Structure formats: structure tokens, C-alpha cells
Image (cartoon, rainbow, N blue to C red; front, side, top):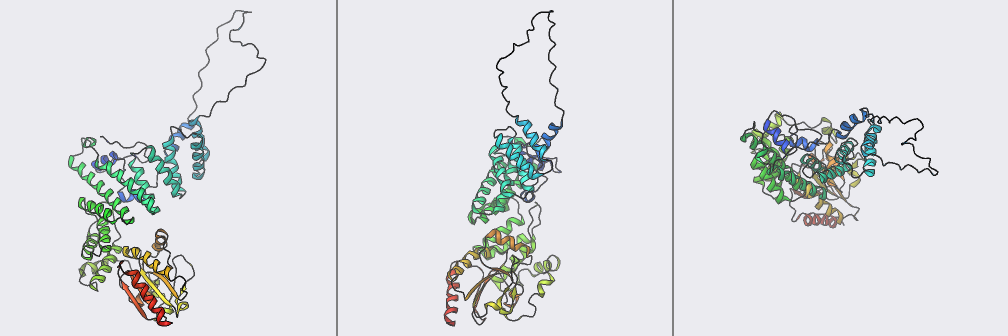
Length: 490
């Protein structure tokens, strides 16, 4: 089977520096100018194919109708053959149905540069002409306009309709994968896995007959492997978000075996950490830290460094020993310093109940002094900490057991350096706990690793401290600690 590029895709396959890359990407409908990361994160930009194609047609002068044939001369006094006898009851002329092509031209021209108007006009056009031969082009224009208007659900809807029309459109499927991954719910992630699987199937079945003669077999196979590696990584990441860890590990290991990438190593480390295989997790995190980004699949090395240091502290109690040169070199050359203002918040405060903590949503600050005399339950976490994500539902479960107790306060205390991530993370993960920034409380309580859960009794004394993620007995252990704290004060 020879796979050809979809000519309807808004960005045509160009001649790339690497001919094999260009031709392979074209063969599966993927633009080689964009690596897989960009394709998933920046695939929202489409040219309005229908507008470009049809506006020019609309501006062209309409062809003049052919002149009627000359009438034969009639002898003087002879009756005119073309002359119709007068009608006593004139018959009404039947109105012709609207022409779909002309109506589409009108819809585009009337919208001008207004994308919202174009969206309305094209949707109205499809209601009137549901079987238009231009339907695929209109869908593409609707996808592009919806993205410009930041209406992601609508863009996704039209992208999926276009995929239904053209099931082999790999580029549109990858675009849908990106939007579905952003949505983040299980149904969306499941559909994204389906599209990624279809694209992967196309890549793996790409026939060698599609290889241009000027491209060597070695170049062709290398580019095919790179593309397959990227799709396995994408699907593995989706399965990881679905908490389907077996499938995620299988895809990520396949991707890593094909071509080692820091992104695959990072996710494999996260899975190993969740499974308490700390030695393997450290090995993967170290690989993610030192591997160069050769395939356009970068990772946040500061985040990797945090994961690596956090896990080493959980396992060995201190960072030295984990290749001191590795960590020291990165801290010296690559680490981003904390904002100076963060160090000034609650400066000099030496008692937990004197802290004032900010909220990510910008709401009223939380004054711990108002919780003095109560049981304070604190979960210290970070957005980059996958075990923290797994712990949060269990923390919320315990919180629900005590929601009638006004003298028990639960707070999820975030320790991210990049605070801009936190609000979006809360919305995406649908966190129900009250979230505050650490603002120095983590330093006061000696938090050196995430997740860490602490219970303070009514006197501010630490009566429970759990470091790391142990799901088997977490709920029972934390519940028991809170009940003991309540009982001792009654």
C-alpha cells in the first residue's frame, strides 16, 4: 500500500533538509517542519483553505453567457415562429434552488476578516447544504476559526467530523490527540489513545514502495523509526494519564528501545517510582537528566532534577552520594533560582500558626492563626510530583470523613517554584482540597521530599508525619492519627 500525503491538509509537505524525513512525513500526512512535540502543542494553526481557494474564485469576473443565435429573417407579414400566443392566465416562474458554491462564496466574503462571523456563516452554510462537496474544506476552516476564537471544544468537534470524512488524515488525528489530551477526562484520553493507535498503524504499515528513489533505504528506515518512536511516546503518555500503567510502560519501553529520549525515560521513572522500584526510578530519572534532546522531545531538566533529588532523599536520606558532581553541576549552571520575594514571605516566623499563606486562585489569604487550637492536617505536594497526584484522592477521602468536624482543618500545601503552573494543575486534576502556597512553611517544618503529610495537634505539635506514597495503609494511618489527636484533646 502506498501512502500519499493528504493534499487537503492546510500545511503541505515541503522539501526538508533531510529528504527521507520529508518523504516519510508526507507519506503519513505529517508535516516534517514540525517535530512531534510541536505538532501536538502547536498544531492549532491552519490556513483557511476554503477561504483562500474560494475567495479568489469569487473575485474572478463571472463568464458572460453566450450570445443567443441570430434569428432567421421572416418574410414580411409571415407569423413569427418564436412568438408565443398570449396567455390568459400567466404561469408563475418556479424559483431555482440556491447554488451551494455561490452561497459558500457569499458566506466567506460577507465575513471579511471577522473569524466569529466566518464561523457563524459557515455553520449556517452547512445547515443549508449538509451534503456540500466542499464539506471537508469547510470543516478545516471551522477548526481554524474555532481555535482562533479559543473555542477548543468546538474545534475538536469539527476535527473529529473531518476525521470521520477522511479516516486516513494522520495530521488531523494528531491535532485531535492534542485537544483531547488537554481536555484530560478519561473519555477524551481514551479517544486520544484510539487516534494515536490509528496513526501508529499507518506509520508501521508504510510501504517501502513509497520511498523516493533518491532516498537511501537507511535514511528511510531511520526516519520511520523516529516517527514510530514519537507516536509510541505519545500513546504511552496518554496511557499514563489514564493510570493504565501496564500499557503505558509497554509503549514507553518500546519508544525508548527504538531511540532513547529523555521524555520516555522521565515517564518510565515516574511509573517505577509509583511501583516503589526506587532503584529503577533513579536510573530512569538519571537518564532523563543527562540524555540530550535529539528528537524535539524536550523535558524540563529542573523538574527532572527535583524528582531525582526527591527520590534519593526518600531512599537514602540525603542528596550527596547521588553523583554529587551531577547535582552540583546542574545547581551551579542550570538551576533556576527561586524568586527573591518568595524568601521574604513569612520571614522570621518561627511558629506554624503565625503563617499567612496565599491561595493560587488569588482568593483571601489563609491565616493559620485562625486554626489555632484545631487539628491541622497538611499535605505538602508539587505539580511535578506524580506520587503526589496519586495521593491527593486519598487525602480528599480522609478529609470527607471529618468534614462535619469544624475543629479539623485540611490544607494541600504547594511547594512549586513556578507558581504559574499550580492554578492550571488544580483545574485539570479537579482538586477539591483547599490549596495554599507553602510560603516558607515547608522550610519551617523541614519538608525535604514530596509528598509529605503532617498532622499538628491543638498545641501545634507534630503527631503524625508520612513521607512518600504508600497507598495500602495511608487512609487508615492518617485517619487514626487524626482520631487520636481529637481524643487526646477532648
